[in-house]
Image (cartoon, rainbow, N blue to C red; front, top):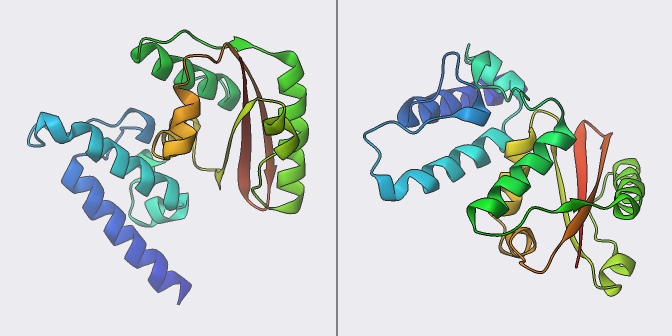
Amino acid sequence: MRSRLTASLATIAVTSAALIGVGGGASASAQTVPPFVPPHLTSQVDQVFSQVRAALPPEVWAAAGSTGMTYQDVSGGLREGIISEINGYRTAHGLGTLAPNPGLDGEAQAWADRLAARDQVVHNTALIQRGHGENIVSAGTYCGAACLVDLWKNSPGHNENLLDPGYRSAGMGIAYGAGKVFVVHNFAY
């Protein structure tokens, strides 16, 4: 049953990738939308592909014979990649970048470790009650920086935190458990 499911998912993935023109040596973090997609739909097609990429494990892409579609972290590290994605997104929206906040780094790391150990995703209400913002995401370890930030962008509450003009600094924690990555990103005014 699992192999039939994997083969079916691979067929869907390859068909989807072919329709939006991704494959071969292109990495999922740098996909391009083919010219036949109308410009006003480009960002929506990118979002759909990001969601498909996040939902399907690497063995699906491998089963389709297209390992080039698996996320390749070319940013030098997941943490640095997430920071770069968030700051780039904020800058594109006319906002300032977020300064590092070592205190929030420590708190975010402790919370990410807790989430990974328990295999759960819950917010740190004590942090939020102190007036901080918090984005949490959990995904398969094949989901890299662009993929993880895309998941936040596509969630209204998380996107609101990413684009809050009042936030000046941020801290992050990353932990692994149960075959997943858990990322906690805290924001401060």
